[in-house]
Every structure is written in C-alpha cells, then in structure tokens.
Length: 180
Image (cartoon, rainbow, N blue to C red):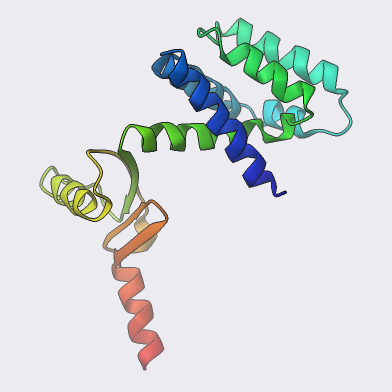
C-alpha cells in the first residue's frame, strides 16, 4: 500500500474521531500548530524520518516538543500520535497532517486556492478570482493564499483542487515560441 493511501486513512480516522466527539475545530487548530512546528524546523522533520534515531526517542522528543508549545489542546491528538508511533508510521506525520487539513476543508465545503501573480493582486482582482473558483468548485467558501513571482512577467496562476489556471504572460510567450 502506498504511503499516501496509508496517510489518507490515518487523516480520515482522525477527522472521523474529531467529528464524533465534536472537537473538530480544536483538533484542526492542533494539527495546524503541529504543521507550523514542522514547517519551522528542518531538524524536527528530519528527526521524524530518521532511521538512525530509535523510535522511542523520536516519540518522546515529538511529544515533549508539542508539550513545550502547549500543543495539543484537544484530548484526541496526543493519543492519536502515540498510536502513529506505535504503528511505526512516524515518517508519515507531516503527510497525515497535510491530508487531515485537506479533509477538514473538504468537510467544511471549503477550497484552498493558491494564486501566484507577477505583482500584488489588487482589491478588484481578488474577488474576480474568488468568484471564478466558486463557480468551478461549487464550494461555499474559498481560502485564498497569494504570492508573487516576478518571473511570471504578468498575469496570474491559480491552483486549487488539483486544477491549474495559467493566465501568465510567461506561459503565453512559451506557447507563442512553441508555435513558431
């Protein structure tokens, strides 16, 4: 079985448990905090996937780091990660967290949209992108993350639900060059 499929099962199980105990929003917050810790420390991520560090030390370190940052606040998350370690799935923690967040947003009928543009989007452009995504995805809510990339020259790139709308000048120039 692929690691993605295993991670999906763990993420779904955590979401199901959090929904059945009416603690979904608290678990979601805890998972976001854990993701922030993972994102902020390369060493922390490497420790979890290391084959050199014994499993019991990884688990102890992981749980101590979470406790230091007063995480988790929900009663579900700590036992969940203890189970992850018992099943030797600590290498998948980062992916499990990512998939949990995706599953949570899907359960809330929310879509996460990444918009990359050559320049900062104006207050007129952002609602247009939001309306476009709303029509295509049929979602009630959109969470838009924006970033800039000067190499795009102009226009923007919209990514959501595995779909990509590339309306960049860089892409258009590439198509013109290929047609010549």
